[in-house]
Image 1 (tube, rainbow, N blue to C red):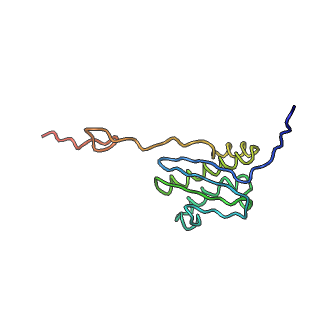
Image 2: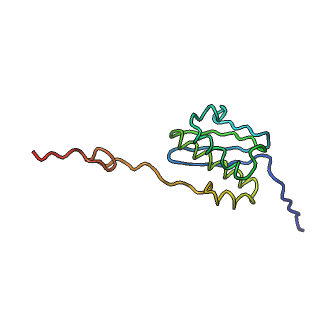
Image 3: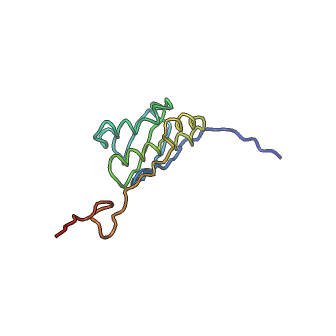
Amino acid sequence: MTAETTTKTPDVSNGTGRRKTSIARVRLRRGEGRILVNRRDYASYFATEKDRLRVTSPLKATGTSEQFDVFVRVSGGGTTGQSGAIMMGIARALKKYDASFDDKLRAEGFLTRDARMKERKKYGQRGARRSFQFSKR
């Protein structure tokens, strides 16, 4: 009794991206290229061109920017961290949708988690590294 396995592409693909303190939950669906971030168009959500380019870069790298609608729920952090988290979430969703995108996405660095976080403040100091001003007298 052998079951035939068919490689059918899924209707919807999900991916989670993280950057600094931001977490993005991404849902990819076949469509005409709309990108909604927290139910708003991504162009109005992100004020700077740098963040908008970062969000669309995985779709452009794979040549699928007009084939998918992207729905994102993002929370935490600022705009830079959120755009980085969305970029990673879209890349992971694309990889789950079609495994052949893995090499392109990995070569561009979209699937690599950026582990840099803010260093914690230490006791007896003004900040993470900055000490209080020293007074000799």
